[in-house]
Structure formats: structure tokens, C-alpha cells
Length: 421
Image 1 (cartoon, rainbow, N blue to C red):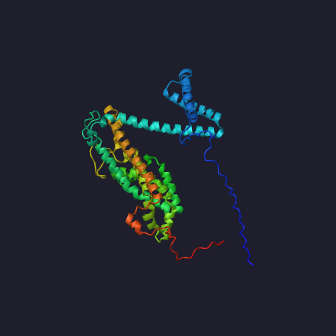
Image 2: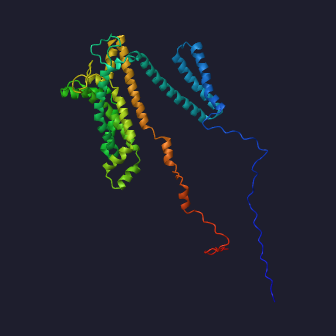
Image 3: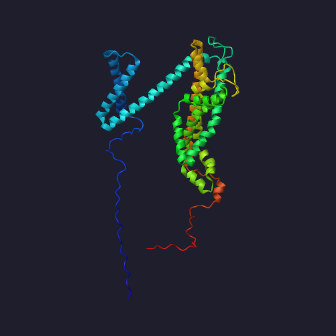
């Protein structure tokens, strides 16, 4: 008796739980274009600039019409104070106390930055405008003042001897403060201890040392006690006393920023402490150390009172640091302003322009050295490198990553995979 095999039970497929939404809604309103996060809306611009425009009108009404406060300074002060008041009222109408504090603080900070910028630009502009006439003569930068009187024209004499003297004195100061300042910073950062705390305290106290005290110290010790004459060497020593705490303090801050993981990695590889400092810490902090040296140089090249006490003035070229009195740019400016003659005062403003340009260049170089690397270099380090395209012949020789499909008419050597179910 033959039995008919039973048909397998058919299990219905489960109903999918995912509900597909339509890709486009015809009844939806048109999309609103999204503004950039850095671009304020018209309402925000009106809230930001409207109070200052209205406060300008109020300041003019108060200072020019109601009160006898004629003058630009009174108008500017009244404008700023009324602007803060109107800004606070407008912020209180649109938000709470946090909005008021935020807008008033932003206005105060912006006003302070604008005040500093206006003071700097006005100072530089006035000095350059007053000293422009002597700078138009080439001999002003190439000649000295030998045989030139305070009333002579600008086509005679120059400040070349003062420039050379300033460079010689600054070189002496750098030769002294560069190893001492960086060495002091390394001692405070890498060695530490109680004595390092004492050294750091002394360095911070010497940062606020008056320049006249440094000049008197060198004058008392080097000139009176040791019996040396006034010279460029004495002026260089006084400048070094002023530059040393600045370089040491700035270098200490830079060295403390170096990651500690670099030191630990070097010590873990078997390097000694001083080898780690010389080959790891100092090369890593090289841009910051250069910035510290340039900032100290900018401070030392403009010192007047130490040079006035220790160097003496000369109207001719002096290149020997121990050869007697040596002039410099700050001393040249001081002596010509004291003469009272119009021509000499204009020469002093010309020398001030040269000194001011020199200091500004030093600060610009310091900023360039202290800035971080370019974003392009950083992006190149972060992004993975792409594999260069390979030739067609080489690509054909390489085995393919995908398994090749076997023809259906040829049997496969490998057994078919069975379904575990």
C-alpha cells in the first residue's frame, strides 16, 4: 500500500513592520532658505547698530545743545556712555538679564580695543608725519653728525652712527641674555624644586624693574666700583639687565606648554634628562623661544635711561664697545629734543620714526614666529594619503579581490554549502 507524502506546511511570510512614507509632500510649504550662522539677520543688525546711531544723536544733543561741553572728547565719551545705556535697554526689551550683560560686555570690550587701536595709530601717524621731512634725505640714514649743528639743514648729517651704536649695544645684550634667559627658563621648568620657585619669584619681580634702576646698578658697579669709562659695553650690560627677566619669563611660559608626553617618551627610550631637554624640549619650543628673544630685543632697543647714564653721547661713528662714548637712537632722540631748535626736534622725530619702525618690525616677526602652522599643512597631516593610480598592466597582474564566478556547466571542486537550517 503506497502512502502519499504529505505536502509541507506553507508558512506565510511575516508582514513587514516598516511603513514607507511618501518621498514628496505636495501640500508642504516651500522650504525656507537657511541663513549662515556667522551672518546676522536684519533684526539682529538693527539691534546691534541702532542703539549706537541713536546714542550718537543723543550725545550731539547733550554736548552741543544742552550742556556747555563743546569738543570732540566730550562727544566721544558721551556717545560711548549713552550707547551702553541704549544697548542695555534694547537688549532688555528682546531678552533677559543674560542678554543685557552679554551685549554690554561685548560693547565694553569692543570699545577698549578700538581705543587702543586709535591710540596706536594716532601715535604712529603723528611721529611719522612729523619726522617725514628728514627721512626724505638719503644722508639722514647714511651719515653721522660730525660737524653738524642743531640749526643746519637736513641735507647735512644723519643718524647712521646712532643706528650702529644701537645695534652694537643690542648685540651685547643678546649675547648675555640669550644663554642666561633660556637657561634660567630650563632650570625653572625642567629641574624645579624650592630654589626654582625662588628664581621664578625673582624673575617675575624683575619684570617690573624700572629701567633707571638697571642703569644705576650698572653705573655703580661697572663704572664707579670697577673704574671703567662710559662705553657701549656698559650700555649693553644695562640693556641686558632689562632684557633678561623678559626673555626668561617668556621662555618659561613657552617651555611649560611643551607636552609632557614627549618628555616621557624620550625618557622611556633611555635618554637622559639633559639629552631630552636638548633634543626634544628645545626643538619643540623653538618658535616660542624665538618669539621670547625678539620681544626682549624690542624692549631693550628702546630703553633710554640706562643708556643715558652708562654710554655717553658721540656725534661720530664708534664701533668699539670699549672705545669710549657710543651714541644710540634713544639717546640721539633725547639729546636733540632737549636742544629746543626746530631742526633738531625734527631730526629727533625722524630718528623716532626709524626706531618705531624697527620695533614694529620686531613685533611683526615675533607674531609670525608664534602663529600656528598653516591649515593646509594640518589638513595634509590629518587626511589619509590616497594610493596613486596603478598602470593597467600592473593592475591586470594583481589578483582580484572578488571571487571569480565559475561557469554553470563545469562542476565545482568544493562542496556546496548546506543551509544550517
